Image (cartoon, rainbow, N blue to C red; front, side, top):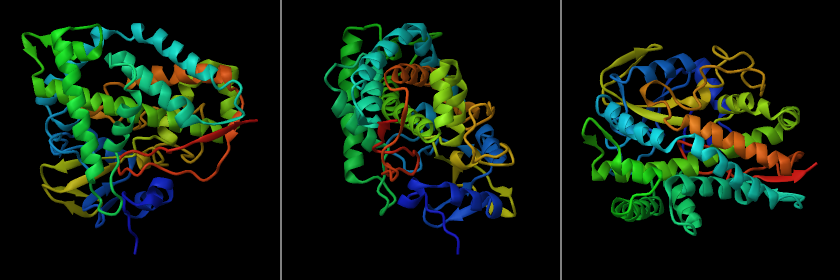
Length: 387
């Protein structure tokens, strides 16, 4: 009998064979292991993302949710509260301005990449990715220099789950509590002495007299740190992996950095780090001969939808000339990722500078160890060697 357990290490390692079975044979599947329905076809996932009145985010959007987060963050609220939060947070992003982030990102990437010029073999995650994403995040948020390692360690733990209990373990909850305390301390400092950083702008963002309250600023900051470390880090890690595994694409990107923009979109489709998010049904839904009941949780398998041949021809081929419009790498609907533009820019700049220092590389190890997470998918280590 077919099983789909999104918490299983085998799914972390390679979910795509199971995704194909789901799409072809069980497009609406009840997972006993996860205790939720699984939608795997692109059109069904897109419908769910657009129909927020039926597929609600208010009970959490992570497959295994963190305490006190559901119903209180941008990703875990529905309109109209979601629209208010998005407007205020977007206002803060606009005030910071994308133009001001580009040059610091490039300098950070160039400095780190320069350290790899003499290395024949190195870990792309530890030696480049982790350093870059942490420093970029710290520059944008104005976090204290020197805290990068402890912040990253706790952010990575926050998005993990225990594959045995299928829940957040004590270490994951402790990491979340640490991050909340850390963010609260920084927010208090910014309220007393505002600076030109995102946390200060969150605290001061105002539209028609409306401002984020203390709890909203705290949860927004905590979520942004988690997203900046893990979502951006996972995105960059998977892009590096895809280019290492596809030398023609890598050579094209090195020869013409303008190619990176299309390569990024294909990576977001082909092997996104954002694999699965959940919703809760507000009303019964009849689909593919199944009845999903109000109150049931539903897993939206983005990674499967991105490999759906009904939407993308030859979906298991990594083709950087594809221009895969409609991929689910940044979600969709009202909950489309607010930081998508910044993430694209950050990853493009990172790989431009990385390729100046290391233009030719392949995987040094074929067997990867994957982060145990029911929501995100990225390698814990990615050894590369020059070729």
